[in-house]
Length: 448
Image (cartoon, rainbow, N blue to C red; front, side, top):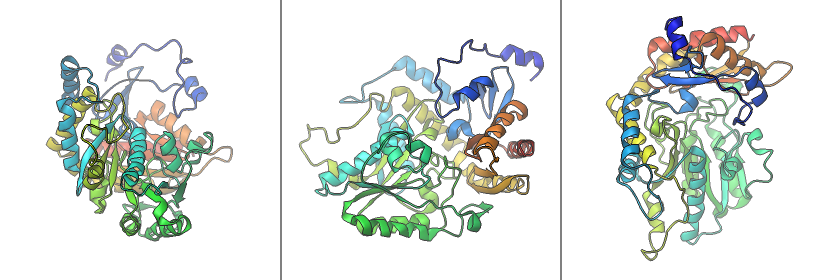
């Protein structure tokens, strides 16, 4: 883009940044040097000054089909003209049922029923409520305990932060839900450093569920929820055999297993769902983000048939599950979801991600040996790069890297603590993979 074209495409800047209290953002630092995005297309964001910024984060793990896809935009426009909103309670619209069937068809085993909501956070709270209610309707109301995992991220609802295990997401908000326990996280740098794919060490950590079951009595435990790959904590792939062992222990004690696939769903690890990659059929899968490629907010829970059927035994005119959202299965979200699934299928984007995984992993490992790089982990089209913390503050080095990446290198990255997380849209080319890691390398050198 020429300088003249950049100026023509530049967006007007807001004259006041103070009114907006930004989420998960150091507001004062941001407002001193804002990173403003005006538009997006394909693999690129465009800053307010017109600069192209290569998206190495798929927005926030969600724009798997890339930005501004004409097919998705057209579907949303048609839907807005035809049906802008339909109530989700006691009424339905055709696209909701069509999308539910399409999503269920992608899920493994008998995960045949979809409950829609609007975000990953709502999906997690929905799954936890379904788990508790399921045991109640089956006459096992003593099963009220929920088990999460250290360093887990399950959104920001009270249920999600209770089973989640990221300290700063929990410590300001009181005692949270009672009756929650946590498995240990699966990361050990001494045994897993610079791993491509699933690490060899760590499957035994699933056995801690046996200890928790013995402590509380397994008949009091309703569900275990884990991310197949822990993304928001810094990209922690599951050790080989870990998820299979969790599944076996849950089966042993009648505990439901929930896989939080808000990040891993819809191709991020080369499959429709990570459950397929790892050969594990959970009782529920939570999803969001990639279902609409980020174009319209949507989330949901995919539920095994026996769980759904357990609720379908009372009088037919009585509500089976007293739960839902005003915007469940919103018509615009359903239209975006159907168009997105069409793109995934027609362009074989899941298969594309699987084919690109080795090249992506090799490119990530070229950063090994750069100043301050402590570890690199890759799986699917995801990479986590741990940087040494600065003596004067945890997270300062990665924050500086994010600023330099955006302002100086023209690439968008995500950071958590002192970890850089990369997860580009699935349409990324091999040349763009090389460009991403070359630019990230320059950033790492600059913040040494």
